[in-house]
Image (cartoon, rainbow, N blue to C red; front, side, top):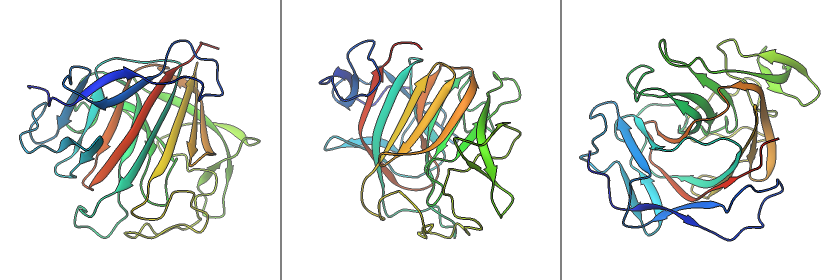
Length: 258
């Protein structure tokens, strides 16, 4: 594929992070060089003939057509990732919540999982589910494993709880701490304790990856944490999952290893 000419890694001002930095931060900005990134779509592979991924006035616009992701070519470990997203108007035509995600520690081949995803740890951005954690595992790819400290809610699903029991991942997503019990996930509905911004406004997501731990924040609030993550490094991906979404202020601060 010939990369779209709009993305570059550039240095931004330090001093914004609680963890000890290991190098100047990286900021993903529109520019003339897209060599730091690849795209993948189920229907067209590494080609993007319809411009599903494009920059508009400094904002990454993902149209929602097809399914796939934008991926860094470089693998990272020990970093603080921060970005903002907001939903567009396009949906996949179904009745359920708008859906996207940030995929961490991506490894292996493009489309190895169902022809769509790279093996990775998903930080869910779906409405009402912001901060849920899911292992995306391929049959022949590195098996991603992790555990979370959890409590069991009245709907018999786990919630992250810093004082809870350490629970290995077993195929069911680990829900964020205040995920509403029995939340029905209808389009554009919100859980009563949601921390994401209202529809059409920007929501900030942070993923602090240190050693084998991944901490997730939504609008400044810690909502979930993975432990014993393996592998503990990999590529970073932004999902296209059938719903129009915009991303901006995507920053990656390298951190000193614990």
